Length: 299
Image (cartoon, rainbow, N blue to C red; front, side):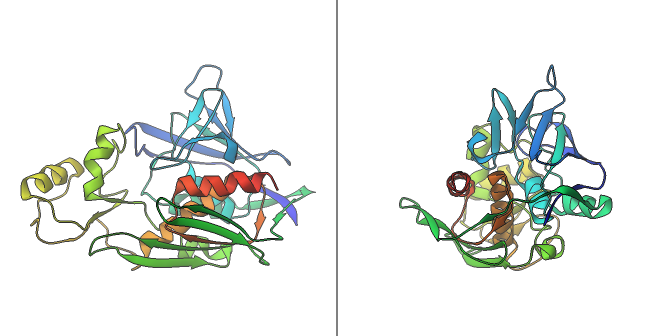
């Protein structure tokens, strides 16, 4: 297999999920053995950061890469689309501290990649072939993620949450060519009970019902729910009625599990090589994903 890059450039624009800033990300072809680099065009000298697992410095509600003070957040959806398309080399420009959130999924990235196409390059790919199972566990949360030998790159994710709405569900992708149709459009999600703490942390300033699935699964006092609905632009609702709050209905019953699988693909892109192996994860998140990716970087 030959290395691959984009057949042309494309740009996408929207606000940032956490900063609320108007942002533009541009992806361009890159030469062989280049990998993924992000250039912060808004900073003096337009510094760059390489998208590798060891450069991840934060995993709260998104993956953040930071090298020498050059920081970029919420990169996982763009990374997932690149990884699933088998792209090895790309130059990325962004005019702010995070990627635009778009609709909360990787769908627009996947669409634009399909439009510009993928070009084979002269150099050979160097896939990371998994020979032995490798597992990472978090005893505190009960989360675990495992990779084992397989002929292809596959991902299976199971989520489990308290409450009466989301519960437990799984999603799997065994053929990355199906990513644009079967997984790219799965949106990020947040629980109503998390919104106030996240705002206090200075996060999700750009979050709304157009870029996230909002889950109301534990009953709150009516007054508190009214205030949170006002913040995210939702109509007031009966606090005794649990369910989903967003402008577009769920696209799949297991959309949230599909999004967690999408996140895993994006975080594994930071291994820096194509992966030949099957990942199985239970209650995954960016933190445990990154621990596995760092271990894979040492193989």
